[in-house]
Image (cartoon, rainbow, N blue to C red):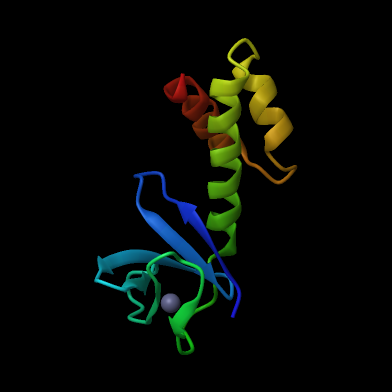
Length: 119
Ligand SMILES: [Zn+2]
């Protein structure tokens, strides 16, 4: 089963399995326990310590995956990286280039603030 990792705005580690986001809730000796990021959902899964394979697969969720959030998270990470690596580039330009066409004005302002904070 394929999955990828990401970091939340607050610095927590998460994984994406079948488009569902999971947040790390527990580290044990050899495994990491993850829980669905949707509060009312109680689905959990586990991976090995190095986050290379899923040991216990999540069962079906009772809700649709929150893919929008994942995309925003990805754009935010890209903006933050460029905020530091291209320090002289205008924040607006960085966000314009990273954000997708569907980005609304509020998200755009959030991303710009993200660039300012990263610097
Ligand atoms: Zn869920």
